Length: 153
Image (cartoon, rainbow, N blue to C red; front, side, top):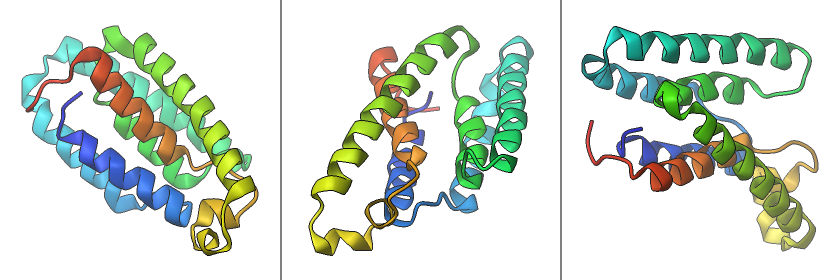
């Protein structure tokens, strides 16, 4: 994962907390960043990344159709997975799982204790749903910390 992705993850978390949506332009920004990384990847490295991202996208589309996930979440997660080396997918999955649990606990606590002025934040105003953008960002930062993300492309 490149350090250039980390600021984008922070923006994704902000938008999902503030508006409960991840704008398409943020997913497109992640894809553009991945295109910059593309020349550094070999075909044996690229093929599994594309396969994983495509599979997650297909499963996400079904989950979206069933009303289980938001459209922004379904589109952003595969874009994020393009940055994860295949050999480190299990570690990233662990980071994401922990981040989802942390987000559930944090959002639940904040919703129960938020002052009235916090209701302008969509995640507080809407009693249902989890802003997964927060989990994506936390997982990306945790994964970067654990793997000591390189500072460039």
